[in-house]
Length: 383
Ligand code: V47
Image (cartoon, rainbow, N blue to C red):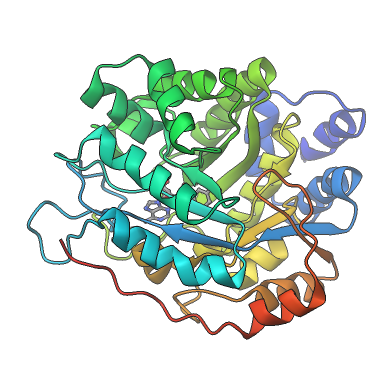
């Protein structure tokens, strides 16, 4: 009988040695799921103790019109399709206002690659939001969107980033990374900017002193080796720039996509992925268990498998949240109170953070007001 390599890898991890590609694949292949979780949890606790972070945020998707057709995406619409929409700046500001008044600290902004919107639209959007809501952190546009802006303006990467920053960009979300392994990327998002481009743009963002996140879409047609390869490409860039704040494995949710015939990841696969991320990405401070794609129950368990962050209240969220809130309950949004109680119920200590992971301290009366705010999902304007 052969011994599971996880025990040898555990010794390496405990000694603070960096894990290799082969180690990562072996961790994914282990049947000792509880031991893997324990190992990742040890690393998580050494960094964050019993703290689990959350934030109070809103997702704004200014348009769902996109000229590409990624097979895993159910969000995009072609121009003129039923349900295609694009906000005016005024509509975007109006959507955010009640959430701002209730106390969100961050707006997460991503959208489709619109075929005709000019770069000025995105600059005006940032300016409009900053002007209306001073102090609100604008975490906006993935590396894929930044690449799109470069192509429509023919500016350099640095100029694109600089103009966005001047207009109010504070940091960038981690989407669009999908899976870096080229043969898989070719099958699921062949038109999207390639892996090297995504990484180069992230490098350019970090060099400007702007922080960003990194995601990985898993549980579709990729292999364990592809997942580890993805993590290692991020680990290399993080060694170089230190600009990533957190890693977010995104559990593929097949419903309403071209890949609807696939089952999507199981809870065990998701927990393994969180744990392997925590162990491989030794230079990432935070691993996020994004409850919207994981479902609340798996996300709660993930906090014991290496994750230290649940993301946020994700109010609004538009089609992404409505579609992907994987356990089917409360599909549109959750409340601060609920996120806090999920964390407490997991035996951990909830700490509200801002986008840059600084603790947010609120007066008790404002917390009560936040918890009392009964937000209704805002219907998307069609235009
Ligand atoms: O890039 C699209 C993924 C991403 C599906 O930076 C899907 O803090 C699962 O990046 N099933 C956008 N995932 C969301 C994203 C994100 C989310 C939360 C926090 C942060 C952050 C970033 O969503 C896309 C793609 O990888 N996605 N379709 C799907 N069917």
